[in-house]
Amino acid sequence: MPEIITLMPVDATLHTAALQAVYAAAPGYWRLYHLPSPPADHAEREVAAAQATPGRTLLAIVRPVARTNPAAGAEMIGVLDFRLHWPEAGVAYVAMLMVAEPLQRQGVGTQAWSLLKPWLASAAGIHTARVGVEQFNGVALKFWQAQGFTLTGASDRVRVGEKFVRLLYMTAALHAD
Image (cartoon, rainbow, N blue to C red; front, side, top):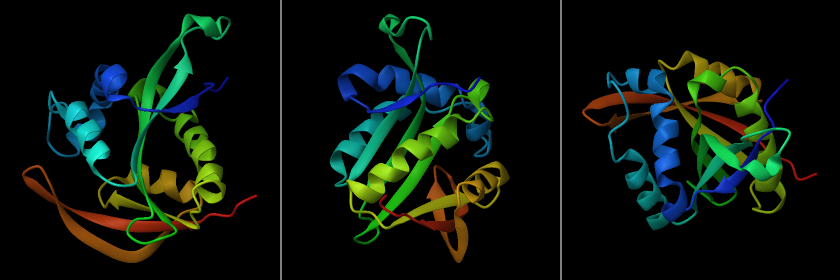
């Protein structure tokens, strides 16, 4: 049975430690950059950067701790990092959709995108979603293609830590229902 998830804004006071745990629970992502794990203060820096960047939002992907007892609380199992109306009006740039590795390939990312997409189109006035995927991240490329994104042919070389990577850009049209 697929996970039952919801999205909620990341609060710097309440969620930084849980966000760092999500980053740590995706070691394969960090290995792409030849890092053994995320930097110890990565969540703190990302939350601060999101607060300082107009239109940037971090959403926690959460699930109930106990399916039979929702009052037992929830746990963060992933994160969606996006920026509204960037690089231009009407566009949302999805910088990251990360799910803890034990829960990958179980539909969590697809559910998270399915929850965010209609909100972007109707409430946020977004008509196009854009993602930049590292050219060597075949899993992410396939994931976004399965969500209806297509490669634009545009790319950029960006610095990630001490390394430069090529981002391949993909877009998808969004429609308010």
